[in-house]
Image (cartoon, rainbow, N blue to C red; front, side):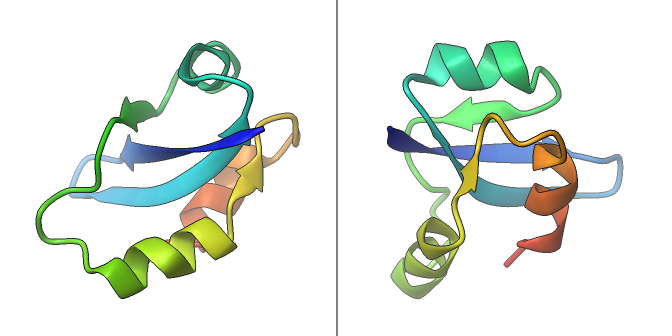
Amino acid sequence: MQSHLVSFEYGIGAVWGYVKAPSAGAVEAQIPEVDVATEPPAWMTEAEVRSLKHQAIDVNRADVLDQLIRTEC
């Protein structure tokens, strides 16, 4: 499985995280509320990227969106 960077916009901001899935399409199919990014945003540091990758969430978890919100950088 690959790690895919995603963002979830909740009205006044967004949370970012990584989701483990076979493809970006699998992420979009399983969690339509998120946007899949091809690269981290310019403001995100390499340390933040490493931390989020370390906390990557399996796309098949029933609570994947809740977990994403908890791993916000």
